[in-house]
Length: 208
Image (cartoon, rainbow, N blue to C red; front, side, top):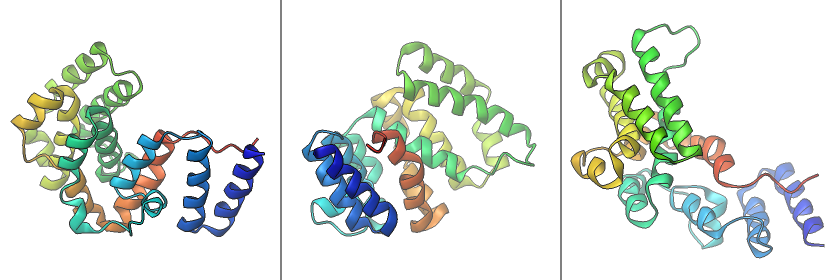
């Protein structure tokens, strides 16, 4: 019965596109244990409206995004912050297609190593990222992209390469959520969360 109810709620929110209908689906999914409350709460904290509606919050504002890096560091952890930074870094980068800048060839291995760490957060994946970053200087990044984009990338990589404490205290200005939201705008930021991070954190819908 619960699976049938979830499928009905899923169809409803997919047809309507309303965050309130998706919030109802999430509420039932939480009730039956289909999703983890911790992950829904994280998504709500960083701006996912269906999750925010569950505890009476409205859509996140640009002002709230200013402190998200600090909030995630304090309330969640390195994996969650790295996931958020990773999807935002992907969104602020110039597109690969038709773009042959040499620095892109240095950034891509770092992004691949970061994705590998997020999948399996082990020492060898962090070492691979550190090796990739050794060939990627701040000057090269700054010459390739605008400084806010370069800063977002450096912050995303620092989360993993230098560790949750040493890296983030050594580089206190790294605030990828804030910087990415300034580059992408509120709508672009929320689209990145919805399209890139939600599928990473929540399991597939229960439809057969």
